[in-house]
View 1 (cartoon, rainbow over the protein chains, first blue to last red):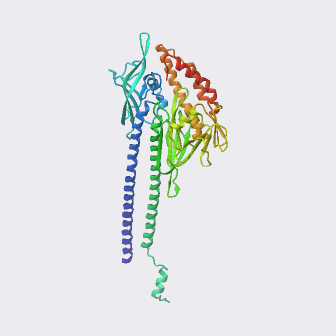
View 2 (view 1 turned 90 degrees about the horizontal axis):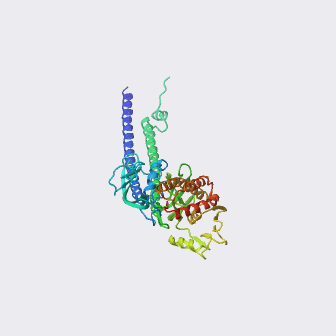
Length: 171
Length: 318
């Protein structure tokens, strides 16, 4: 009877030991995993940020934005406001194209802060080309904003100072 | 009648090995923990491989970004990987723009790692074969205008591969020289190790470029081009990738045509003589209906006509 009790105690001891060991290894595994994967998020953020920095310099030269030769010689960092206005109205197809959360263009020389729409264009202060108000990290660059303007019977090129802001996700 | 057993007989009866339950239990649990640990380490190393592959792929795409920018053409960049790397090229035409994809394998401990995570991008048009290997790559870009700029095309070659161009027209030769690729050789350079690109008929040609017919014969297959940027695209990629990327370019062309159509109307309302909506509608249909590069020829007239109309209108659209 005494021998049987002794064996039961031993099995209990071992069970506790095994539970302890398993818990130890699980904790070690979790620690290693979290340590390893914390680098993953960091490198993703760094790559996203690098991409946004490069993209903000590039976007103004994308065919959907750039002035091309429409306003005299070809210029770099020149955004065609007429194109942007049209693009903004039909942005649905471009939602995932540049893989950014948002694209906003500010007309720095304008006194207005109103968002551009068909009623107030070109007397407005900003184009929210893409983005639904989600938060994120902004990268910006100064650009020229050009459009055709009519004064009496004369059509001329009007260029203003603007700011292109690209927003990337911070999630 | 009772039978008296000796000590050794009792021992034999207990079992040959005389292993107690606690030992068996400990062995089983020990083995389970050991196997679990090995499994965990293997899985973790696979996750790490995928992470490295995804990081390399994203870095690679980021490195190509400056090539896509700008109004100037002919930029070049050297891309060096830490180890020998295999780039698996993916091109898909579904969706509004299709997409460019890539998965990376690395040559570590004398074997290729598993195929990594696929990285995709909708706004890139990179021309290289379905599979390319090397430690160092050379990439350069050229704008594709048809008739307006549709995208900058990026070309990628293995830095160890020599391209020997013979019979090259001067204009093409100058442009290729401007890419500053030391592996581009011209005239009297044919060798069995090089990729021999012949602009005039000759022996040992791996790639034949027929400038007048605007066609390229490569690995027994014919593809067609319009303009130098598509010609380079056909030379440095393969038939499947070329045709796929061409479809993607046409898809972007459709979207841009919409943009210019609207812009031409807007400027017309402002007083410019730039209403080209009819021409743009026709071009858009041609973009949509282009089945393969063989049909590029049918677009030539529309492209020239729209290009001239834009150049001589008082208010150019691009």
